[in-house]
Picture 1 (cartoon, rainbow, N blue to C red):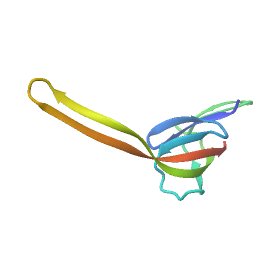
Picture 2 (picture 1 turned 180 degrees about the vertical axis):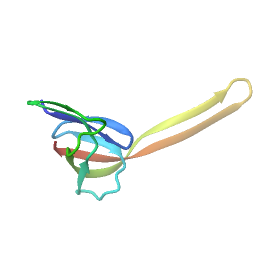
Picture 3 (picture 1 turned 60 degrees about the vertical axis):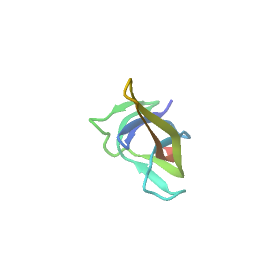
Length: 102
């Protein structure tokens, strides 16, 4: 089993070849190649490489498929007995990425 752990947008993702993941919006155009060079861990049949904090020279190649918006998150504030109620909404801007090569 071959997989890697990459870091992008302040978050970490475990990816395999052929995976479709949703990451924070990337400033690229649709159908362009994307390189993730912050590889924290790489597992192959021959062994495991662990970065300190990143593995030098390792890259994960991916293809940007689409720019989408995530599900709406509703945040509500409420204080009892004082008629205080506030509701805010939020939709994250995401990029859908197909992992091609580790």
